[in-house]
Length: 260
Image (cartoon, rainbow, N blue to C red; front, top):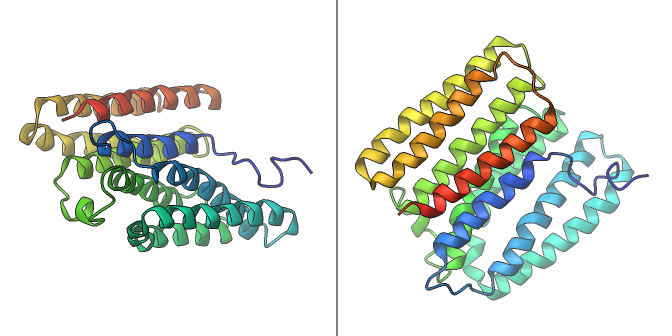
């Protein structure tokens, strides 16, 4: 049995950008005076290892509980528990984020059990959880509390950055699906184009109300809309799509870090 077939290595390549972007943006925006709190190290490990555990558990549920996925599931699950306890030992207040993540993770696992983990709903749940990590990393990177400040002040810059991350990442769910699994299905192509256009329009009032630098975010979303439209009738390899997502993620990360 290979490492990959046993659920040890996630095969969803877009997940790497989904995991890295929100965390790095949250940490960079939350760090005060360049000082990084120790809790961020185990939190980063928890974030990635926790996804590995989630992936292995999802495969186990999808396979109708085949034992070949149990080694990866228990190994990553145990590591996740240990890292979680380490994080709480350094800042117990971060436990308040657990109920925020729980519904999205439960939805994703429910979809895996029903073998619909590739659905838009399941992808949206995973993207929502990833976007919330922007707030968690921001909170952990500052003084660790009060934990709910980032959620209570929805108009705060970090809240807008979390929304920007969601806008982009959920767009990739529709875009990639329209280009690969649902290629040639007009409804998916229109959904991808329409969604990207809608979030671009929604970002305009934010740019008008805040610093002019936010127009870079509008420009980025407009570029994603143009991409979804231009490639909707063309064929692209999974490798080309992956490289395009890497470039887009790097560009959005640079914009997010430069915004006031």
